[in-house]
Image 1: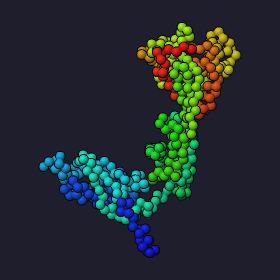
Image 2: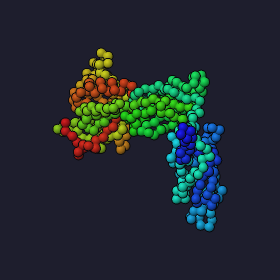
Image 3: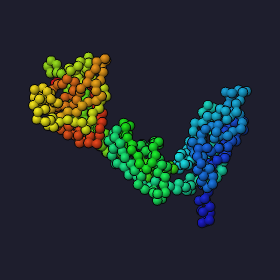
Length: 399
């Protein structure tokens, strides 16, 4: 019994056998249906044999058929298979990588797309090793990496390889490649070396776990490090300025009453497109902007003389705290053009009287807003600001 169990263990399921160079393939549309697989994707030999991976999918180069194509669309003028074969790609690949791509198994299939997705099968792998029995031949492997647990959107995360399965001096650092995985999908980066500076600027990745993986032969998720992409964003709708903060496992929203533009009759604010075009009167035009939290300016930081100038409408804060409140931050880009009218010089600021020349005017809780903006944006140099008045009925509100 023991001998029989040992024998069974050495014999893999037929469909799980890896496919090697010279494996036999079959296409029933070919006049000579038996063909051979030629491996060109890599030079990795396991057990002294060259193994195929999913990149061996160039029809004329990798699938060698000597016959002609019997597809009905060719009628009596049947072309050589090698001149018309085009492949969809191998399905059911192995989970083990052969050099830089998943290997092909006996159960894998390919399909000739110009010919009704005609199935191409593997009839003989030419070897007996199963996926679970393939020994990893990658002598040099990355075993550990360090990097930040959190990175703010549009900021750079710094990563460094810290361990290998051999002495560090034996490793060619230029051979180290990088990839990252999000939601089960993996991206391969062009940069190489034992360090990586990666800018996170894909909005769809905000709030998600991003696994950064250095590797020499193929990515191993067990040797990666996970970073959560956090974010701060601002939204202004003509009534409120919303500060949205995405943190690991939580989304926080802080809402502040705000207006933009000069007040009209009955303390009303007009956000129509016509009003947006009016310089020094209308609100900040709708669109996409950004601010830099590192550039917050505080009225308390003014010198004595500058403060006196502000009282009489001069200095760096003309009108002083009555007009600007305790702080401001500039809105970019500057200027912007609205239907041929150039406008600019916008900020987010406070003040004691609702209304502005186009800035976003916080009419209350300005100190709290700037405290949170500075705290959450401590490591950021860009926070997106969206201005959208579509929720205002008839384009006008009354304060």
